[in-house]
Length: 224
Image 1 (cartoon, one colour):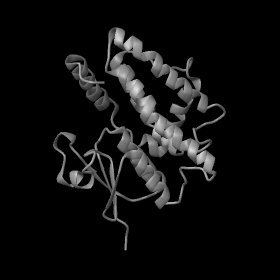
Image 2 (cartoon, one colour):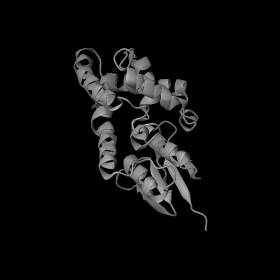
Image 3 (cartoon, rainbow, N blue to C red):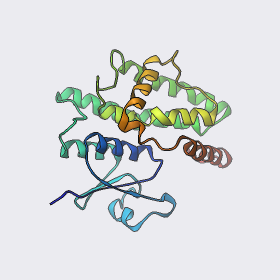
């Protein structure tokens, strides 16, 4: 019996994009169900009743949620085109940096994006500190995993497209070739991979979306 694989996502979610890349890199056929987060479908709420958000991968009727958890599930289920190294220590290190993205790097960059003035000035050093830590991990490597894309590259992958969007919206330059030559090169290498560049969300549409998000945060003083 053929496997049934479905992915619940939105057009712009960087977390869902991780799953798109992983499935395509492994050659897995799947059905995409696009969700409207402002009007969530009963199926999404059924499959992810705890967090009620995308992405959700449904494999033969069984749902898996949270993007890093889904990536591990994909890696454990489909062995072709490995995303994690065989060595246990190297696997643990990859998981550490993937978690660092969500726990440290992304929140620090987001804080810069949704603030202005003194608060933004105070937020920038932490974002730069986290970016420096990532820069160190790329020494002597084309990708975080070496010569081929792995789980860490997929976890960090949103930077390849979304950073330029956030920079355009804020008028700030966080990553340039002088300060972060390895990160800049990695972003280019990532964007050159067919599976990656074919699945970027439309740039202009992202700019419009994140401009509206930033304006809302600044106008309402929404929690960061």
